[in-house]
Image (cartoon, rainbow, N blue to C red; front, side, top):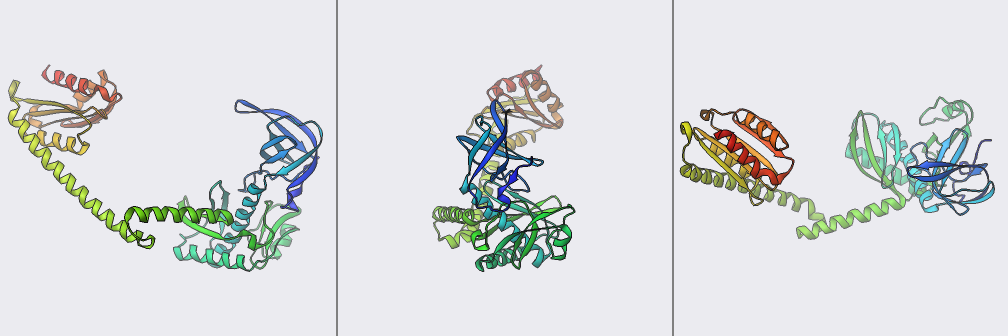
Amino acid sequence: MATRRLYYDDSYQRDFSAQVLSCEPEMHGIRTMWSAVLDCTALYPESGGQPHDLGKLGEANVVEVRDDGEDILHIVDRELPLGSVAGCVDWARRFDHMQQHTGQHLLSAMFQERYGRPTVSFHLGADVCTIDLRGPEPTPEILEGAERASNQIISEDRPITVRYGTAEQFAELGIRKEVQRVGILRALEIEGADLQPCGGTHVRDTAQIGIILVRRCTKMRQDWRVEFVCGRRAARVARHEFQLLHRAAEALGCAPEDVPASLQRTLGERDAHFKNARSLLQRLAESDAAAVLRAAPAGEKGVRVIARVFGEETQPEYLNSFATQLAKAEKTVALLGRSVCGHLIFAQHSSAGKDVNALLKQVLAEIPGKGGGTRDFARGKLADATQAGKAVAAAERLVHG
C-alpha cells in the first residue's frame, strides 16, 4: 500500500492523523532508530533538491523522512506502536523550505525567459540556496535583472497553483523544462510566469515568497552557480551583512558607504609597509651576514661552516635572506634552523664542494621530517620543531666528519 502524500494537495497542512503500518529498528551510526511506514503523511521526504521535513509522530521525534518507492519512511527516535498516530510538521522549517523552493522556481523562470540561462540543478541548503545555470557567465547586470524581475512578480501577489496532467499536456501549455516521464505529473504554476513539474512544497501566492536576494555567482564545472536566499532568510542575511559592513566601517573609521575606498587605501598602505619591512629585513640580513663572515674562522681546506638556530623572534623571510647572503661568500656553508616551526635551510657557495641536499636527507633520516632542494640550497621541515637544534648540530657534525 503506497503512502498517501498529503503535502501534494495542501502544503499548509501542519497536523494529520495516520495509521502506523510498520515500525522496524535500524542503526544510525551507534544509535538505534526506527523506520516507520504510515498510510498517509504530511511530512515531506528529501527530494528534488529540497530537504526533508522534521516533526513528531506521537511522542516520537521525526529526524529524517525518506522516499522509498511508493512508501515514505519516517525515521523516528523511539518505537511506534501499530495503529493510529497523530503527526505534526515543524512548521518554521517547512515554511522556510516553501519560500526558498517557490522562490527558486520564479528566479529560474526569469533567468531562462529573459536571459536564456536554463537551470540544470537546484539545492536548498541550511543557510543558502543555489541554482546552476547553463550558458555564458551571467553578468552583474543579468543577476540584478533576474532578481528585480522576480521581486516585481512577488509584489504583484500572483496566485500559485498545483496542476496535474501528462507530459504532453504540459508541453502544449509551454512548460519550462520538458520531462520524459509517463502518466499523470504534478506541476507548479506561477500565474503568467512559470509552469514546471515539481513534487515539492510551495507557498500559495508570490507575496508569501517575501523577497529574493541574489548574492553571488561562481563557476561550477561547465555551469554557473548562483547563490540566493528568499523571505525570512533574505531578511536575516541582509541584517547580518549590514552588521558586518557597519563593523568594518567602525574599524576603518569611515562611513559604511566609504568602506570600499577606505579599504583600498588601507590595502595600499599595507602593501607599502610590507615592501618596506621586506627591504629592511633584507638589509639586516646582509649586515648580519657580513658580521658573521668576518668573525667566522676558516676550517679545513678554507671552508667556513656557520651553524645557527633562531627562535620565534626571527622572521622566515630573514632566515632565507641570511642564508642566501652567507652562501654568496666563497667556501662558506650555512646550516640554519628555526626552533619555533622546525624549518631548516642548508646553503653553500659552490666552491665549498659539499652537497647540502644530500646533507639534508642524511639529517632527516636521523631526525624525521621532509624537505629537499639542490646541491647548493635545500629546505626542510622537521616533524618535531623542538629538534631544530639537534638537526643543525647533526648537520655540522656530518660536514666536519
